[in-house]
Length: 180
Image (cartoon, rainbow, N blue to C red; front, top):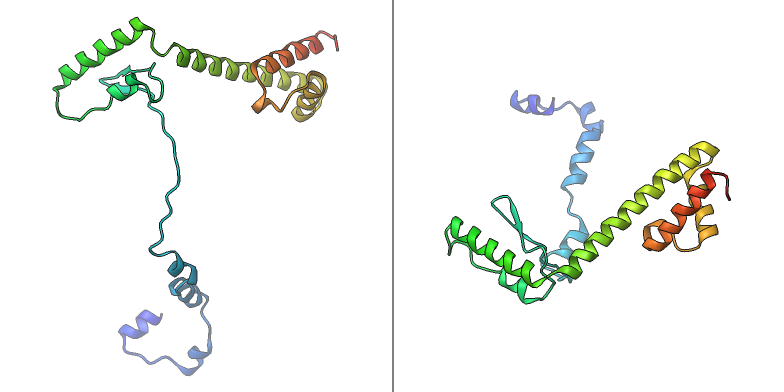
């Protein structure tokens, strides 16, 4: 209405000046300068970060899966785009991959990745068993997990080692067949 009255060149009535519009208050608050924003202007603080080279994706293929951080294998993947044609890049990457596999580069990392995946699978299996046991006994999952921790020892599941998770799996399997 204020916009319409402005377009019609109307003067607001005196009683309308007395009324408070909630929208006008919100607009005024949004347009007000916040004192904290002035303090932050021009300031910059660098945060630390670490990154590891994982692999190169080129033409729907993965290359360099075995490069350890800081190794020569990892550094060799750094290059300037546009120096080679796409077919030359594919040839160079395949050749490097063959050499790397031949020398056994990255076995430690591959073993670490497979161990990590195995631990994730064990945790998933344990969670399924806990869910089934909790449903069978009518208890909350947290109670079953706590009982497993109490009997087997060790930290919570998220930080438990593979051996600790395996021990809990064996224990809950025994519970299913009646051996507590």
